[in-house]
Length: 124
Image (cartoon, rainbow, N blue to C red; front, side):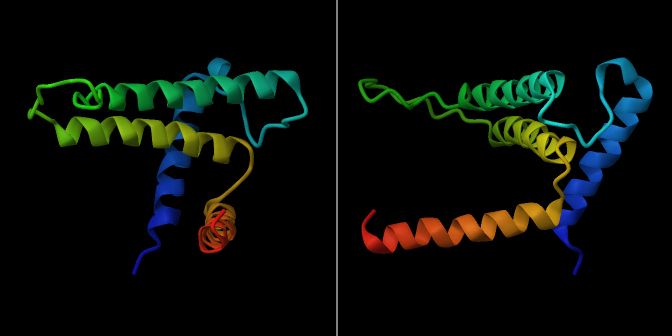
């Protein structure tokens, strides 16, 4: 079976390279050196774009107010998911721009998963 995480990283990196070729002035080469101010500013901008996309996804949630008496039943799952994917792409770009790959992400994810499960087990 194909490695889906690798596929996602690869697809994003291909897109980023195409974007860099078409507009090199707005898209730096990577990996970025995060000790440099301009690199930190660029990564911060990308992260904020991802946060904006998450806010766009949250705008599809109409029934989150605890005091609301009526419920809005209309919910577009596809549009919600599309906004989540947009956010994910920006966060994935941050990993790629800073030199991480799919192996780095899965290893960090597994380490953190162990930590949070131990916390849950210990009543943290």
